[in-house]
Amino acid sequence: MAACRRDHLDDQLPVWFMRQAGRSLPEYRKVRQGVTMLASCAQPDLVTEITLQPVRRYGVDAAILYSDIMVPLKAIDVDLDIVAGTGPVIAHPVRSVGDLAQLRDLEPSDVGYVTEAVQNLVAELGDRPLIGFAGAPFTLASYLVEGGPSKDYAKTKSLMVSEPALWDGLCSRLADIAALFLTIQVQAGARAVQLFDSWAGSLSAADYISYVQPYSARVLDQIGALGVPRIHFGVGTSELLPAMGAAGADVVGVDWRVPLAEASRRIGPSHAVQGNLDPALLTAPWPVLAERVRTVIRSGALAPGHIFNLGHGVPPGTDPEVLARIVDLVHGEGPTLRRQARAAAGVG
Ligand code: CP3
Image (cartoon, rainbow, N blue to C red; front, side, top):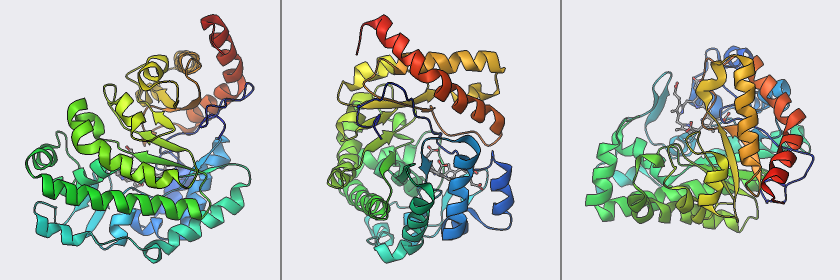
């Protein structure tokens, strides 16, 4: 929490992992047997158990709610599924103004199971914060318009630049749904939120600023009033980092493509950073990987606040033992490496 607020404690470097709960954990695969992804997200006891699994195993400094960016859309009865190995699939993609009728307002009673799970979790977690999350309008829109995962987002981008009224209608609704979904989590006890705009990096900075940033800002502004730190993350966002920070985040999540010191220089001194170990390197031999972890820590030390994470989610095939070693390294060596790097650079 201190790192989020750029009030970095000298003797601590916090760490958690995006997708820390999930298929890399045998205990997750066990409890998910016979339950679909979306069904599991609607069972508070299962959500609580799965969210806590990586906390128990790794001693990470935060839990992230086990849910999905598609959960609030499912909750307002959008006909969708999450297909294992593929991702979200939408039965009736949004291609015209008429298709927007699928997107009614989200009501707290649509996701009572989320409130219940968050309340259970907060009671179990004690001092350790729970991070709530939502998908940002562009990333949600990409699934709704494409009908599923995409490599080039051609339908989404084409609609975005050619049908301003439809794009505005779609993203305004998605912004309000995301903001309410986050508000529900914070009111139930989540102490920070992360807005995932995972696929925003497919856009040019100019298009991001014209067509996407206003809607993410609308979400983040609404959350600002709740007083919890807001983390804003996307993949491939090297050119978008300043605009993502300016959308209203306290912390910008950075993928592995830009060193954190350079990312922080781009984002500016009023934001902390989160990241940014390349998840592909989790399969490298430990001495090589450990050196990469240290490099991330030294670079992050030059930002006004750093939360160690991967540059994207934990890949399903990851050996949990490797993540455990990373947590131990970040906690054990992190504070010293940070101090040394800051002293060498003449900061702080
Ligand atoms: O980080 C965590 O541990 C919390 C849980 C979490 C999930 N999804 C659980 C999940 C979070 C934060 C998400 C967010 C999410 N979902 C994003 C943004 C984050 C990112 O990775 O960029 C996106 C794009 C989605 C959409 C989605 N849901 C995808 C692409 C997939 C993977 C499909 C596959 O099988 O490869 C999902 C499914 C999903 N969400 C799983 C988990 C644990 C795997 C489902 C399973 O176990 O069957």
